[in-house]
Image (cartoon, rainbow, N blue to C red):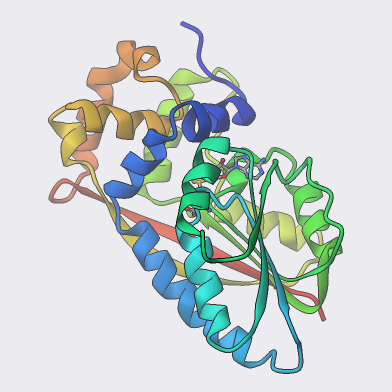
Length: 267
Ligand SMILES: C[S@@+](CC[C@H](N)C(=O)[O-])C[C@H]1O[C@@H](n2cnc3c(N)ncnc32)[C@H](O)[C@@H]1O
């Protein structure tokens, strides 16, 4: 069996070749809705306190199809004019985003964060559920701080070690021989402490509906593909074990999720 081993290939599988896996994941969870509610509240307060600036320069790293990007732009625009840049390496997701924004002026850039060379500093940089697909976190964070204006903020969201993360880790042991674990917000906090970078963290809870997984229909298989970052045919040998595991940890056909939102400010 040849498994997908590196994070770049996993990102290409999930967001480009099979971007419907990501859309299918979104359809099974209130994670995005809760994220948008949380971010709107935070950003309205942030934008209110930035009244001295003319245009708020905003960058979203890993914008996907842009639902959160657009709602963050809207929240900031309540108090501030904004110049927005949205970056993602998936042409498929970016073209969906482009269709939504015919009346908005947003710079859309098709690139990974690692390959992008910003020509300006940003007042706000967000990266929501993207760091799983970036290998060198230290470089990625330092590059964000380098490109952040004084008084600006970075927000990075990542899953905590919640039941979905534990499920993934349990089966990663069977899929990968290198003992890897899913990267999570606790790991990022550890790195920031080591780098002596001050941060604040908030947690946002949500649920994942796994009823389709339990009845093993097509959508359920796609959800498992997304969570384990592997085509379902690669999981053939362990598919019964996966269903058994999910049956044991589910609550009313749902798994609880907890995401950490890590905020870094530049004084
Ligand atoms: C789980 S999706 C999140 C999308 C969006 N931020 C959201 O919260 O809905 C992860 C996104 O990260 C993008 N991505 C993968 N590798 C990346 C990289 N190295 N740099 C920037 N974005 C990346 C993917 O194409 C995908 O759109």
